[in-house]
Every structure is written in C-alpha cells, then in structure tokens.
Length: 288
Image (cartoon, rainbow, N blue to C red; front, side, top):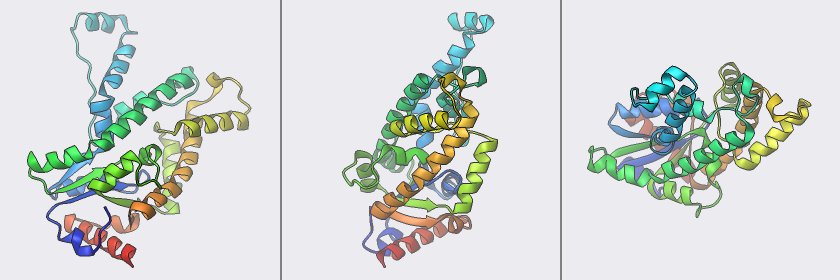
C-alpha cells in the first residue's frame, strides 16, 4: 500500500499499518501507545503464541509436569489444569517453548527437536500474518476501530521474500496495510547485542541459515558433538549473526514496498496524531 499523496493517508477514514524492524526499536511501545489512542493493536507474536502454537506450548508444560510423580497423577485424573498465561507484554511461554539448541544438561534442545519447533514457528508466523485482513475487518465491525496497527516480530523478514511483490505474505501485507520500517541505528544494534548477551532469548532462523551458522559455530570452537555446544554461547553468537543478516533485508522490504521511520524520531512521538504526522513525513520523503 504505497500512497499517491500524503493526504491519501492523513485524511483516510480508516488507516492500517504494519510496523517492522529489529527488536528494541519501539514497535511494541508504539503499539501500546496507539491502543490508548483508539487504534486496534494486533500483535503477531501473541497470535502465534495463542492461536497457532498454544497447544504445543501447553503440551510442553505438561510434558515437564509429567516428570514429577505428584503432578503426573493429578494430570491423569484431570485434577489440575495447566495453561499458558501469554500476553502482549509477556511472550515468555513462546520463547521458552522455542528454546535454544545445544547441551541438554545446560538447558539446550537436541538440534533435530529445535529444528522441528522452528518449523512450527515458521508455519505459525505465516498464518498469523495471513490473518491481518480478518482482524482489520473485525476491528471495525466488532469493536468500532477505524485505525489498525500490526506489531510484527523481528522474524517477519525470515518468512518472506522482501523483493517479490507476489510473495503471499508480502502481498497480504501490502494489499491491506502500509508497511512502516522502524529503522534503528548502529548504536541500537550494539546495545541490543549487549542486552541479549545478558539475557538471551530464543530466536527464529531460516532453516538454511541455522544449519550454516550451527556448523560455523562448531568449527570455530572445535566442537564435534552437538551435545557439547553451550546453548547460551550459541544463542548469543547466533543472535548477532542473525541481526546483521536481517538489517539489509528489512531495508529491502521498505525500499520495495514501504516507508522508513527513524527509531530516534519515533521515540518522541506521544500520541496517534503525532504518529500520523511522522508517517506523513515518511510518505512525503519517499515521494520526493
């Protein structure tokens, strides 16, 4: 959805945008703020963790609980109930399920199991992004929202071709929303890597990229057995490699199909009107 004029966006009776970019650039902060300004907030990660991977997550909880005889007996007799308390602001149940590959004694998953869960996430993410048209309509017809923001995870770029207008996910996003790239700086990237090293979080990798980086990490560290890989070590190293690989593809998606908003400019936006003004400036810049 590229506009022929700034007014086409600013004066539209209804607006729908999809924001994307690396973690930590303000996508969720923006979405939460706009929700308070009567925008409908669609979290792709929340949809993934509830509608499409909720059963996988809860079954994993139950699998762990079944290792405890006391809890196992209660589960078998339906005496206790286990559920996932995932929210827009707490996606830990999804992150915990995805895990990190490596030594099981250090909390890692066997590589094959990790790859199986990664594939589940890929399928779920594509499905969640495909739900956007339904939720845009639902936001209006059910709740009366005219404005809509889709808050996507950093792995959006892993399940699309940022150069192909006929890519199924790209076509869904561009047919129904304006794509807004929240672009961070090199300092943002460096800070993000530092934060990740202190508090690692599971990530989604393209299958071929994961295989490549897994082999590269083992070679660098002289590791022959998968179970000897330190999950935290690979997680931090792989995250930095993944981040650097994603940045030019985020830019390509924006260059081909969307608009760029600087994270530093977004940080001072206080309400929906100021966000509309910021997007308007990005539209005008692209038109020039």
